[in-house]
Amino acid sequence: MKPNARKSNAGVVKSGTKNSKQPASDTKSAKSKSSESIIPQAKLLRLFQIIAVLKSGHWTIQQLAERFDTSPRTIYRYMNLLEAVDFLVEKDFENRYFIITSDDDPTQAVFSVEETRLMKKLIATGTNDNPLKNLLLKKLSLNSEIDSMPRLFLKQRIGKLVEEIAEAIRTKKQIVLTNYHSANSNDIRDRLVEPIHFGDNYQSVVALDTGDQVCKQFKLDRIASVVIATSGYQFEALHKKNQSDIFGMSGDSETRITLQLTLRAYLLLREEFPLAIPFITQIDDGYVFNGPVSSFEGPSRFVLGLIDEIAVVGPDSLRDFIDDKIRQRKS
Image (cartoon, rainbow, N blue to C red):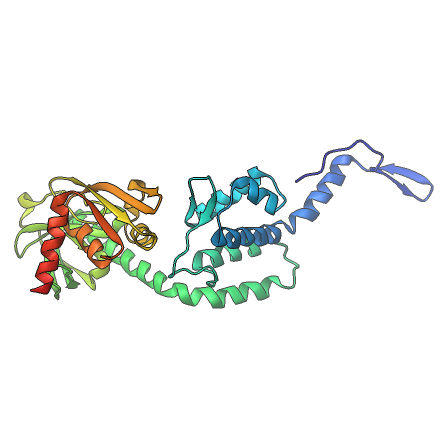
């Protein structure tokens, strides 16, 4: 908080026997430059103090402001910053804020990649003559870059697949999806397909499988590589531009389903299917997802993977579909 401006003779400085006036604006500028050199470090410390507090309990904005001796407006700015770097900041029915944690993300866990990246950014923008700056940046690199390397390699590989598939769509060429791992048939084999369009967030591609001449959705992370064939489209009349649903499945119609979720199921749903977030609401004893799906295949897989943590509220046809899946597994 900035101190209130006061009228005084503080700008008058004695030098020998002569008085020379220093403009008040220069004095303020000097003070500002001096304080700005420590703002990144102070902001960094305050930010991670807030993270620790929000992971350990529920706090109102006013309580946080009093806890950190600052204004509610400043606390709101920190909240916006946390959400901008993908922290799950939630609010309970008493307007108290908290950061969601679970057994997979304990409160005493080490800094995440996002936390470390933010810390490095704030330190890097600090004063250049701080003797600890380079040492801290080096330590943060050692602790975070190794963990993030698999993600970087995955993004680079997916990016290459997107470029190759986009070229095939542009030139209307067939492609071979090598060693594609199908979750439906649980086999790994090459697929000759005609790509039509990408799914949401470029995580999949809708393509015509030339084997059974049916349009399907293929997950990019299940493709080993893409080979562009010399032959062009052979079955373009059969192409259907079906948009995928929240769970990555495509179909001709939509059905609304309702699932009741535990905290763990809620966190996994957000992480694996971010398009589901607008359809989730918080209730007294957990969370509820109520949204449209094009096929029961996607939600049923999610439910079966967390059978003890998800209750199917409706419709009955989804419950019957899941019961059939369970019987098939037992037979």
